[in-house]
Structure formats: structure tokens, C-alpha cells
Image (tube, helix red, strand yellow):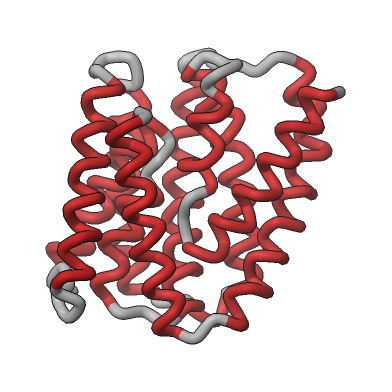
Length: 240
């Protein structure tokens, strides 16, 4: 019971943060859960919570739907997610995460030093962002930070940013969860029973997060996203 309570508290906090920034649920949960569970089980557990959490976000921020951007990110993300999920055990996980962390940290520092610069907001950036985030999500379950870095280039409203990130993550999660299942990755019975607690708790966390987002000015929201990208970079670089 203590195990389920601790995971529920973690789910609540991660869901709230993930809603405020448009990503981060997996970035928070996966490193902590890896202390107790193997990587494949951790990816499956967080993947299920993340999948349902994205439905909550889309429900709260449905006014931000942008079909073209969603398709440009989403289709490459699905393909890359499948590839990443099939290669989960084939690469040096820590090395790749350290490289990713260094890239995030440099990108964030550059943004603060050159606040007017953005990744070019074009089709190439959208497709590249979908490929990169999908691959990282499939392999490590942490594609949201990559997705956020590319989506930030499009200067989206709060609703559009969070809805687009959630919708892309939803289709990506679908692909990788199917792949994990096909690879016969499973959870202990206790954790499957715990979903009856985790999933409603993720709804509560998303509700709290959207209440915070509604009170944030657009400029403050974009700064918060940039700061969280930087913190994600530090985490991946120092504690992969």
C-alpha cells in the first residue's frame, strides 16, 4: 500500500508540472521509478499514466487544436517512436541522455542570451521535432522535452502549445505501448491494480496544472517552458 501511495503522490506532482509546461511528466517520473523497477517496466508504467494524462490535457486545452502542425509533428513521431521502442536495449542509455542533456542546457542558455532567436518555424523543424521526440519517447520515454524545444519555435498560445504537445504525445504513446506489449513487457499485478488510483490522480494533477496555466501571462508561460527545458538538461546531463 505504501508503494501505491508513493507512486500516486509522484503521479499527482508530475501531472501538475507536466500540464503547466506542456511536458515533463515522464521526465520527473522515470528517473525516480528507475530506483525500484527495471527500465522496461518503468517505461510501460509511466507510458500508461502518460497516455491517459495526455487525454486530460487535450480535454482541458481543446481550443488549441492546429491540424497542420499536429500532422507535421505527429506522423514522423509515430514512425520514430516505433523505431525507438524496438531499440530500447540496443544503445548506451546514459551516454545518449547525457548528450541530450548537454544539448538542452546549451539551447536554454542560448535562448536567454539571445531571447529573440528561435528554431526556424517551418515544415523541416516540425518534421525534425517529430522524429527526434518520437525516437526519444520510444527509447527512453522522455520525448516531451525534445518536443517542447521544437514547439517553442512556433510561438504558440498556451492552449495551442499544450494541446499540440499532448496530442502528439498521445499518438506516440499509443505506438510505443503497443510495441512494449508485443515485446511481452508486463507489470506486476499490484501496479496494474494501482492504475485504478494512478489514473484518477493524474486527472487531478492535470486539473491543478490547468488552473495554474490559466493564471499565467503568455510571456511568463514561455519563460517557464524555457526554464524547465534547462532543468531537464541539467538532470539528463548529471543524473542520466
